[in-house]
Image 1 (cartoon, one colour):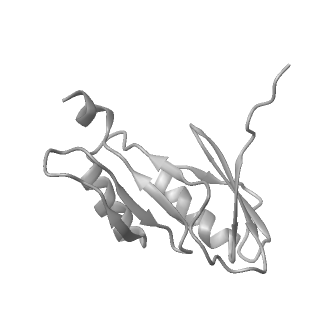
Image 2: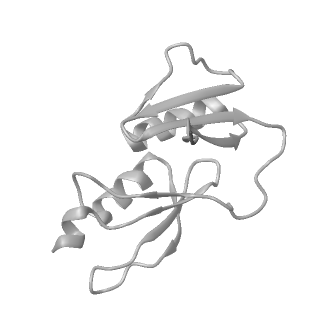
Length: 124
């Protein structure tokens, strides 16, 4: 028997606030019992779950593990604009004139993640 990943855990300074951001990003839901000020919060999505844990240490260096997002119903560039409107920041832009590449963003606590091309853009 093997193991499976139950959820991916992300350390942060405000679990509920960061979970709320990621719930919007991923179209997920916060656990019913999560409340502001809780030391942990869970976001469930069709693709899995993210667990956010409040820790005393601040983020100081680049993530060793990050999420790569692939938009489902919009283009990569449209998704980048939507995420920026939610409060993400653009860290590095690796989008190329031919439509390939990706964008590196940071969430509201500075955790980096990438936005890749949608399946439709890859097929085109």
